[in-house]
Structure formats: structure tokens, C-alpha cells
Length: 124
Image (tube, rainbow, N blue to C red; front, side, top):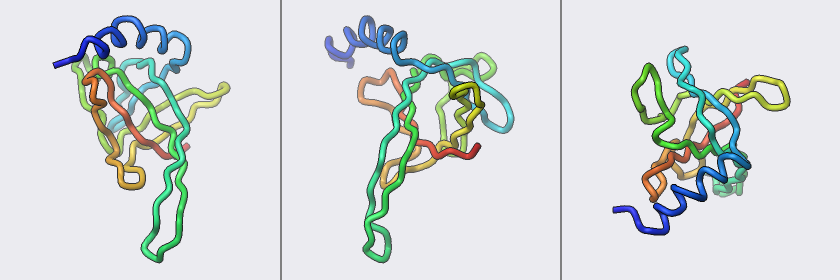
């Protein structure tokens, strides 16, 4: 069940956040592009201790994707590991593969139930 605060954010805060900070992206799976999605992008640095005991840092471009906007061929789909996020940054088309980051899964449904969080690494 959605809390009153989550519902208020979804009704008022999320649309304003998308308007101010949203970037248009598409997901690509097996060469097929999704509809255009207004996502919130964020650069996040994750730190893990590798097998040899060294601290290693990874930078991910994380995206928050509204569940209702992740649509291929008219159907709402779940983003998954291996999908590609296509975003134009400063006039250059860039591709980011959805991949696990540190100990985090590649995709996760945020607690509000309205948004996916996906971790990516740049491939193009």
C-alpha cells in the first residue's frame, strides 16, 4: 500500500522533478527501442573491496525510470540486465548498459513502487 507521502510525491513532486531534471532516454533490447522515457540521471560512485583486499571505485550513471513509461510495443516491461539506455548528451548519442554495480542488482523497484532504479556503465 502506498503511503500518503509517496502518493503526494507521485502526484506533485515527481512531475515537477521530471520537468526540471528529466532527460529523454530510450531503452534498447535486442535492437528494439522502447518509447521515449523521461528519466532522472545521476552519477554515482560505488566502492567495493576486491578479491585482493584493495578498495576499488566504480562510477555508474544511474537512472530513475517511471514504471508506467517503460514500454516496448505497447506493453509495460521491466528493465533488465543487458538492456541499453540510449541518451543524447551534448548532441552526442551515448549508450549505457544496465549492469549490476558493486553489490547492487542491475535493476530494482524503488520502495514507492512507481520507479525503477537502474545502474549502468557506458558502452558508447
